[in-house]
Amino acid sequence: AQSVTQLGSHVSVSEGALVLLRCNYSSSVPPYLFWYVQYPNQGLQLLLKYTSAATLVKGINGFEAEFKKSETSFHLTKPSAHMSDAAEYFCAVSESGANSKLTFGKGITLSVRP
Amino acid sequence: SQTIHQWPATLVQPVGSPLSLECTVEGTSNPNLYWYRQAAGRGLQLLFYSVGIGQISSEVPQNLSASRPQDRQFILSSKKLLLSDSGFYLCAWTPITGANVLTFGAGSRLTVL
Image 1 (spheres, one colour):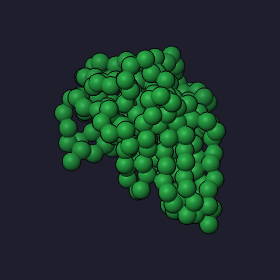
Image 2 (image 1 turned 180 degrees about the vertical axis):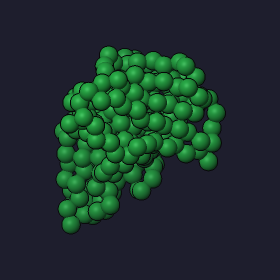
Image 3 (image 1 turned 45 degrees about the horizontal axis):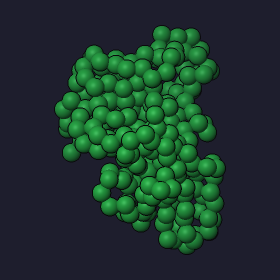
């Protein structure tokens, strides 16, 4: 079985500040890990994914995440927040290999203050 | 390139009425197809997935059903809606091989009154 924990439901940062969204996972086998972003009333869009290659993964819009097996974490970061980053962010885990279903965390809403 | 379409985008239905949400994928063959529901503050819940025509797996017992009459068509249905069926419904697909990257449709917002 696999699971994802995203602590807290809301993070607020100032424009230009560091963004850090935390994700911890549980998986009995080597995982694939994903971050998705959802803007209001839209579907989810893939930000980045880890599939057992480089542990530091770069995604779209300046986001990156680092896979840390020892900490079972896959935290999402961005050095400088922009107003357009305000959205809901979901971490997800799947077993490695094709046709494995994704399990999502509950999501974190990011607000960016001017 | 591949695209995914969902409709209707918004739906307001009375309790006890039927439901049909449709999803189609273009530009690929034999996709794995998924229906998720997103309720406020509860993340995404996988409702159904399908690996082929007529093959439907249900993840949770509920008032809904799904069908896949064609390779790239996935339909979510209910015979009688409940208030608790309200939510944002998302269709998604993955290729049959690869790294399980889900591509989502724009979603259908259902309000049951």
